[in-house]
Image 1 (spheres, rainbow, N blue to C red):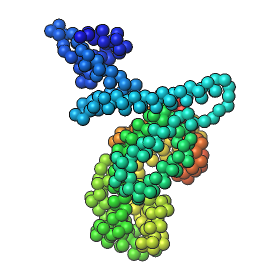
Image 2: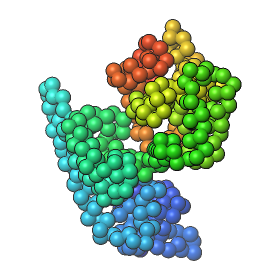
Image 3: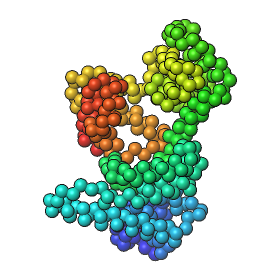
Image 4: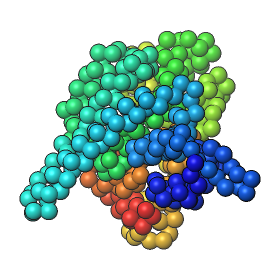
Length: 386
C-alpha cells in the first residue's frame, strides 16, 4: 500500500490532483485510515495508469469517468485501443518533427500531409456502421455519402488546414466531429426537413389550405390585411404543430424558414413548380412582412456592428458588440451541443478576410466592405481573448 504522497512521487501526478480525482469520484483510494490518510494498492495504481493514458490522448475527465464507469468497460481492450491511438499520435508527431526540421533549416516547404488525415477518414467510415440510418436520411443514400467521402479526400489539404487552424490539431478535430455528429444540429435538420416535406406533399391539411389561399392570386399586395392574416395563421399553425418552431430559439428557426422561401434556389424551384412561377418569393415576402421586423439576436448584433464602417473595428464600443456576438453564438452552440474548436473566432475572422464565397455573401447581406470589417473586428477579439 502507498500513501498519496508516495503515489504522487511514483507517477508525477500532484497530491492535489489525486485529491481532486477522489473528490469527483474518478480515482478513489483503496482505503482511508482512521487518521484520514488515503492509501492505494496495486489495483488502484493500475486504474490510475489507465486514467493517465486517457489523459495523454486528451480525453476530458468527464469522458474518462463515463468510460470507466461503464459496466462493459474492459481494461485490456482499452489498453489495446490506447496503444493503437498513441502509436497514431507518435507517427503524427514524428511527421511534424521532420517538417519542423525542414522549416528550421529555412526550406520553403508548404504541406499539410504531415497532419495525418487517416483518423478523419477512418471516422467517416465508422459513421457508416454507427449512424447508417442517419446517413441515409441526411445524404439520401449510402452511395451519396461515399461520394461525399471521396470529395473530402480530394480536398484533404484544405480540410487539414481548417482542422489545425480551428481545432488545434486533426486529432482534436476528429474528436469534435464525432461529438458534433451526435449533436442537436442533425435533429434540427431532420425537423426542418419534416416541415418542408409536409408543405410540399400536403401532409398537413390546415397548412395546405392556408398556402393555397395565400398563392391563389400573386398580383395581390403581400402587405395587405387579407394576406397578412393568412401569413399570421401559417406562422401560428407552424409554431403550434412543429417542435422546431416551439423550442428555444424557435423564432430564429421560423425566421430561417422564411429566408428559405426567399433565397434558397432549390426550395424556390420546388415551390414554384408546385404553385406557379413567383410563388416562393410571394410566400417569403408575405411571411417576412408578418415578422414585423423581428429577427434573430445574432443578425441584429451583426447589423449593429456594421452600421457604420467608418468606425474602428478594434474600438471598445465595437468590441463590446463582438463580445455579445461571441456570447450569443456560444450559448446557441452549447444548446446544440456543438464543439466549435479552441480557435473558432480566429479561424472565422480569417474566413471573413480571405474566403471569397463568405465575403461575397456577407457583403450581399450587410453591404459592400462589410466582410473585411467583420473579419478585422473578430480578429482583434480573438487575439486579445485567448
